[in-house]
Length: 180
Image (tube, rainbow, N blue to C red; front, side, top):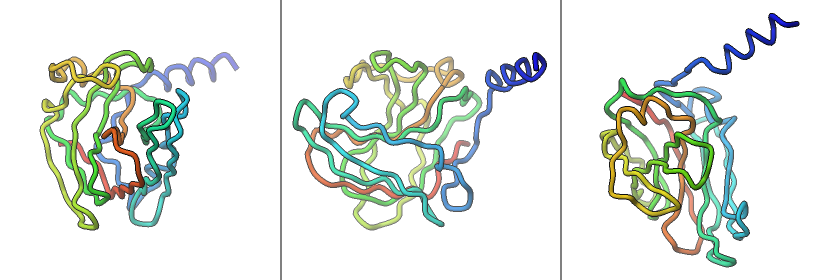
């Protein structure tokens, strides 16, 4: 029993860094979860659906009760993306301002990192961008700083957030996210 506990602890703390989240050909995304502003009293609602070809994220953002965001997040882990320089994502969705997010802390008030993008409605797009273009944000506001290689070495969660301060329906369909 003691040996199983030691092995489990070692496995938990090992760094497992996926090079690609291929939502269309694997079960990647089945363990991603929706986190909406209702965790802080807001009224937004969204769901995720894993299809044969993609991960779909859709819902409605509400500004009521100080709300205004919907997000989709990977499971907690230890990811070292410091050896990568680019991220490529294939997606389509509502013409709204989404962001890919990376976190180094589980605390919502600690800085996190975002790269914003806007889909063209109903058109598949492939976007490649530099990881160094992720900007540091704290409590929803940009600090003006960029992500560092040290930060990239200690990512604990990847996600997608819609936080454009607009109420209404949205859809985002993601085929894959790949690091190079």
